[in-house]
Figure 1: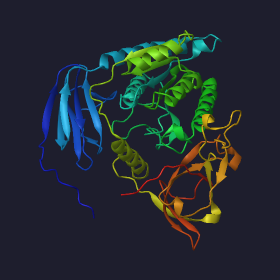
Figure 2: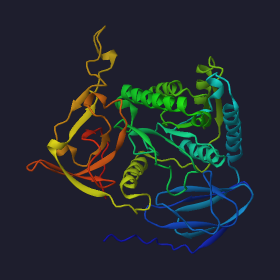
Figure 3: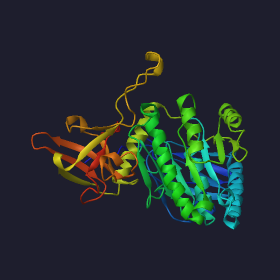
Length: 433
């Protein structure tokens, strides 16, 4: 049985008094438990109110910010790597944005016009470089909207980290209640498409196709549901905002019909977007300051975060779920990869030549030891030619491959047979610690 490292310094329970519009920022280590509770006043974590006098466990590797509008007393019990208070935050500007969006939702709901634009609520896309606080702002805007009775749709296009599902996927889910500070995004009805890689440069055409498929599905939903249409959507994006990343960002704005672009923490990006979108008078580009509590992460930390997200999928945020180990025959499944290998850039080809590789080509994979430790998506596709246009039911993790017996052992989040025999592989792998 693994032992939990004991911190060299034991921190006794302690109280922190916050003045109005101040924030307590806490960073939790990978192995040390911490819990917080509200003793007096009112406070929230990323738009979700803290219940009074109830201990809230904070997951390992978390960074939380407890904000109060009117003043609060917070108690902490356990060990944190860092904790400090801040009296300068961008929260007032964030809540002002929420108020404007709320007004647009109300006008859209009240509109009896047959004009589609008049009945369309805000479609907000949050953009900015890596570690600028995009997902946190999305979380606040969604929670504040849900608190007002709206059911906005959350769209996550960040394949590098993933907050609706695993990294290497994009997805959407309705948000009916403020997002739980511990459990994160609600996953009752997620719609997930598996891209397979944690950077779009591997197959940008596939990334664009999946965004188009997701947007088309949401459009059908909005056309048939006035409530969802008025509530609109909040879209999280990648932190790659230059070169190909910038082009994919423009593609996302166009594909999802975004009419509000919130730019976090970069003047240059805001200026570029205002210039390129000035021909669209119905699109507002707004620059916001990023929070001082945002922590810069290097590549190694981002990789660890991805690994933790995968573990969380199978074991739960608090390690309270029990995934199931199953065995299946090679002959009972089909594994496919999307994309015909790396393409040579056009500049490296003879004049007039086109790249030979097809980014949408389906390749059947022979099952071998190469699949060990792979995370595979379980597709809803009935036939292979439906794979690209189909969303996925979930994911499995390959723990063992017996070539002689032609059997695969895999970990699944729930018991029972796989909902489909068609599986998709990308480059997403995980080594279970």
